[in-house]
Length: 239
Image (cartoon, rainbow, N blue to C red):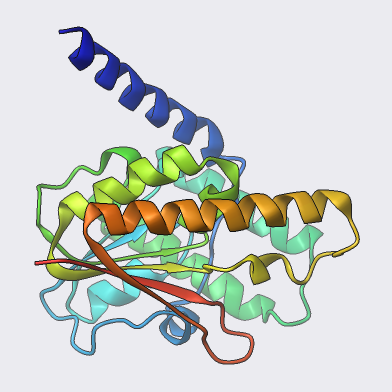
């Protein structure tokens, strides 16, 4: 009884920690077109159950639904999708990026807003520490930024989330996470002690997470993508 209580206490604690982190992490508004260069999506998604972990204001789920996938996105910030939109729009106005086409970004947000309105059940208010899906029920999981952020912020929450991803994936199905490299911080000032510290934490968390995933039964490989495309972790659930 004591062991059961302690296990449940730890699980609820990790869920609480994930919720606390939710609004401190960057919110993706990535276009599906851009994500298709970053991730290796199945060639034919028709009928596949696909999950976007930490989807934010991306139009990926909307696009996958139009392609015939049984797609869902999960994010603790979906308790208030309008706040997600405001946060992304505020970020874009405060931190303009010459590489981003603002008009396209706003089109992405508009597509997200429309999809939430038309398909509210596809946008699940929840976290990766407790995925509301049956065992071996998902064909493909991907995460842009969200799981990567946990490498440096809270690796124990990440490991709990990875175990959940393993649980819900079908055998021989795949989890993909981007970015999966300390190069994630390469655009920051490398002489800044704080940047150096975070980079070291990220690298340690990366090794710890990969070891943990292999222990779960994932077959993993890390792909260095093309120039300007982040490094991708591909993890296949063993059959």
